[in-house]
Image: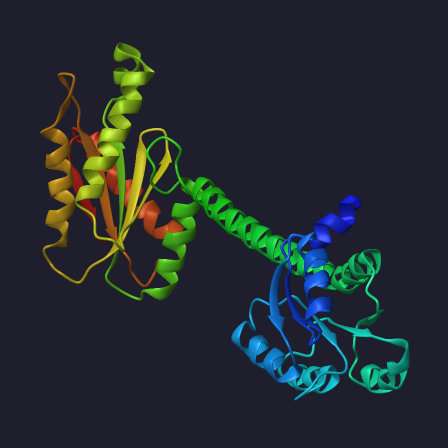
Length: 324
């Protein structure tokens, strides 16, 4: 018998609990059920059927049972099974004289019935109709799980992309340190939260324009990156380091150790002692400490910038600390 594609899809790979005490009927019906590529679990009465259901509780897709059987009839078996799993589809096979049983079958929410003698068309159609809502529900659950997984994946990608964009928005594209906007944001927050022992350093690469003019901007970029990485090695994790533009950098840091100025002086010496492709270069630095009269981070950085100006004006490659 030819079945349509929808019926084929619904009936494929079912596990059927078939309960029937008449061996000849059972044998003929199993031949029909096997045409559905179904796995058949057999039982000869309701008691045995209940035992088989409990043994294969996670496997059984549908139950087909006779009504009138010894030891335990089909409806009593269904009643017990419904206490365990109320969702499993149940079909009853019945003769015309057993119509009186149908009232209880309705009360037990039996899915459908098949009249005896069992016809191959009836059993295929009835099983397909009984399984259709189950299959549809399974498909909906599966699709919903796929959508949830897809949604979670998209959310993760959005979060990851958001972090990337936030990093791009706050990072200098060449050197990888804080850009001007993020440096001022972080250092301003630090200024507000720290009442004392806060320092600002302004840094400038000496005669950087001459380096660009003589060796080209590609070499200039490499020197900017080398300067950045060299300075970063001397900084603590809470120090705020940023590129303000061109060859100008700034550091804001908190320190109560009297030797902290040596850290900044070491940065100058480190730069002085390195070369890039036999090119030597130096930096000048201006340092200022936060005072009560500094109303904001701009005021503190301005004093550090004046110290930098003094360092460059007095010969470059120097650190000058402006206390007031």
